[in-house]
Length: 333
Image 1 (tube, rainbow, N blue to C red):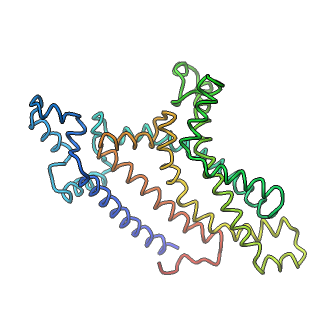
Image 2: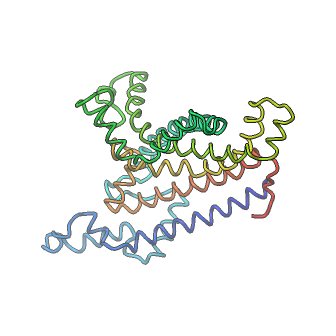
Image 3: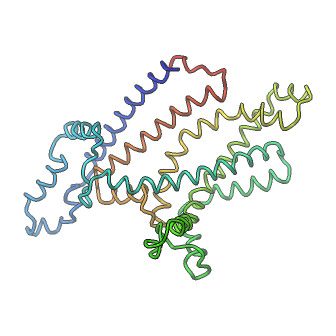
């Protein structure tokens, strides 16, 4: 086990290095003068009201006057010290901006993941057991409809009908807290925070919930058709024991694989949700950073997403041995 973890950790570092190098290179060689675009002064520069010296100072400050490989080497040296630099948008440290946005996104995604797994896995199991019966047909239709609906459309529909006041005014239009909550106690502020997250969580959850339920159903159907399941039934074991002890455990391996990419996928999905509901999380931060060509913030978010993805893959590999003892992690990789 230790040998396997060491190998995978070294592979993670190599993969992270290649991801960050490629990301930095693409950002630097992309068309457009980042400094001029960021300051919004192309017209002013042509008119002569802004000196070339100011633009050169801006480029030097962020290392844009150096070759790509040199700039990346300097960024990597700072990253090792957990220094992501200064945001080009507001001049604040990048870690400060991420420290404000990341907890909000993590709370939003953890709540969504809990709801997704608590509901979708049991529904997928029941659908597989009741294959071609009324519950399976109705749930399949509903799940296909949910999976086909785009996030941005559902978010806008929820805002229109549940928060705009034109039909109902049950939820806030956006943000994470009300104006009155600043001076309130802990419990009222917590309730207000949760109330602001209801519509975003629904928007973020329904698509992944529908996908995972159908995925669980497909895996269960494949497992319960195996010969050893028929043997277990022939031995007189109860249906619950056959399903939950023998069939479900052996269907977990594909689900564990899916878990490795679910959290990074949700983090990427919050770009749309946070933009619609004006939630100051990582998704909205990434969107604004791309529009403003804020290279330090873009690199920080890309690196964090890569680390989460690689950590998820490693965690899934380690869980394989728990789900199926036949898997030996000491095997060559």
